[in-house]
Length: 170
Image 1 (spheres, rainbow, N blue to C red):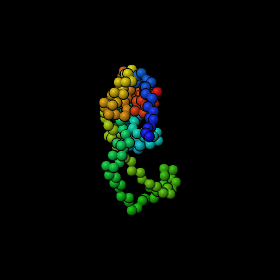
Image 2 (image 1 turned 90 degrees about the horizontal axis):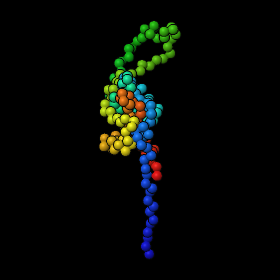
Image 3 (image 1 turned 180 degrees about the vertical axis):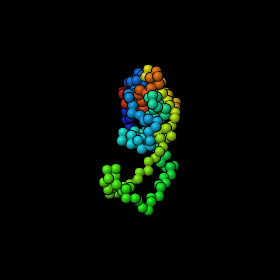
Image 4 (image 1 turned 135 degrees about the vertical axis):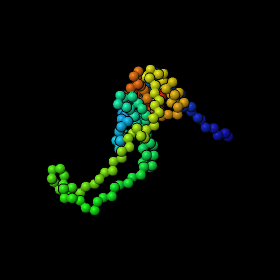
């Protein structure tokens, strides 16, 4: 008596995309290099992104900011608040309209900018780059995303590993 198990081979998957333009998500949401840490944190968490491209004023990619970059920054920063005074002047307890302030808090705003935290490496391809080359570059560079830029270097799309996976079909 023999025990044999039938194993069915998975179908061969094929990439249904010819160029980077076929793979990319156009008009990606990005961060300005001068944005602050709070803006970056809100964008990444609200959109559920693991990272976002960072662009300059002309729309050219200058780096990538990831959740990991924000976590490292948060772990390494030291937060010292100024001591609060033992008293307040009467005029300090009213708003600009003269109305009394019931209570108030002082927010300690982190002055760190996205450009201070981002990874300044930019790996990009043109929209007409063959899809197979896009995948080879992602593997060779060990990256999860590539930027797609036009002739002037303006960011027009992003290709992530998940975008590649979406184009695989039997």
